[in-house]
Amino acid sequence: MVGNNPNSLTVASPISRLSNIPTDKAPKFIRSKDRCHIIVRTPIYDAKGNLLAYNFRYTAGEGSFRPDELQRKHVKHVLIGFYIRRHIEQFTQDNALAMTELPLSPEITKFSKPIPANRFILHLQDRQDSSASYQHQVNKLKRDNMTIAADAYTIVYTNWFRELRSISYAVIDMTKDVEEQFILAKNIVKKAPWIKIICDRCDNQNLASIAFEAGADYVCCPTFSKDIIKKNFNPYHFKANRLGYDKILAVILELLEDRPNYDLFLDLISMRNDIKVKIPFLLDFLQSDITPDYIYTDIESSLYDIDTETLHKLICIICLMLLEEFYMPDAEKVHYMRFEPVKQILIRAKCVEELLTYKSGEVDVSWGFTVGLSTAISSLYAYTNNIIDELLTQIEARLMVLFDEQPVIDTACKIAKSLDSLDLEYIDGVMMADVFGRHDILFSYENAITWTSSFVTMMNQKRY
Image 1: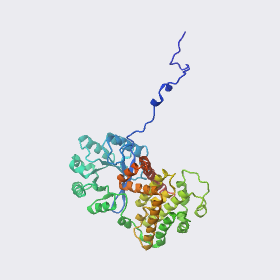
Image 2: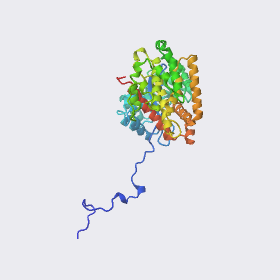
Image 3: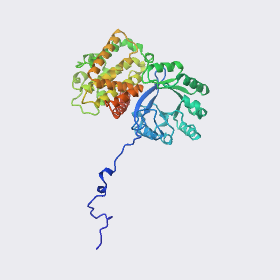
Image 4: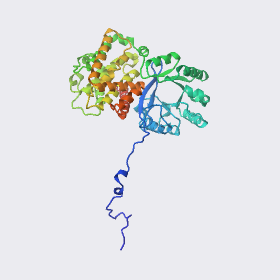
């Protein structure tokens, strides 16, 4: 009698091989503990507000919430996760540069071309090893068109001083001894005049002002000073649209009421057919994840058919577009969402909205975008008058009432502001109190960046 062949393709196997594996030992997908997340994207700009690059800071794995803990094992997670698998433009916009502080590792050379290298500024970590092999790697990256930055201490107190030809930017950390670093940086520039000075960690406008006064070429700061806003102000547009400058704030104030009637908004755009023709495209973007149960004809007829959350977001965006016109050169009146302070406000507003979606059972999410925008809108008013001052005061008072009634909205706004200024101690307290979780905060900010970048790209397509 021929015995059963256990390897036969025709034998009936009563028990699957996998069924012999205990359930608790079955193969499972395990998320890498070294997976990194974006903490913040901060613009680097000159004294006129012109953008150089965005400075991206990342967590050092799943257990971290600090930007200065990255190790070599995290490099591939950052490069693949944010510059290769998901293209760099998902987090910036077309042709924008990204700067990140990373330790040198073979992965940087390996992935330099798909990053792409010509849009990436590698910021060498503090006291980066300057042995011959690392200097050779930097020279190779430079030949691949990657830009290299290093902090003043690293350049002066290590052998990187011998490789000045490979370095384009000297970075000053404004949280350390500023005077000493500027002395070192200026000595570096005397030796290598092509090197520009970037002041990092200008977490508020006071530090940014100090940096520019001391001779910095660029600052890394989440906000823009009134002086920079004024330099971009278009007085000719203001003379022709003086009333609109005030009305924008009145429209935003109306959105903060419990039951706005939108009359001020309709009056604001009543003579702006160029804005009205953009509304269908804006609605397509804002409603991309839902199927509207109405057919849009015009804003007056469809006003109450649009759901409240989408309508308020649409009105906020149109207000930003109209306000941005006061900072556009006359030749660029057809392009919107190019002024960097406007993009920062968009990220703030979207981040607050994303945070509130995690508390949708406790709070009305439709407040999110409007409230987030309202907390930062005053930064776009370079010049004020009595009417504007009064409207800003009323907006602030209304926000205070709203925060008292719904503290979770207040917390969401403070988180968004704290991320910008890297006030991570406050966020630690929020997580310890279990108001918002770590992943809620990180994914909210990341989603805000990707949404803003997609929106900016959409607004700058040829049809607009």
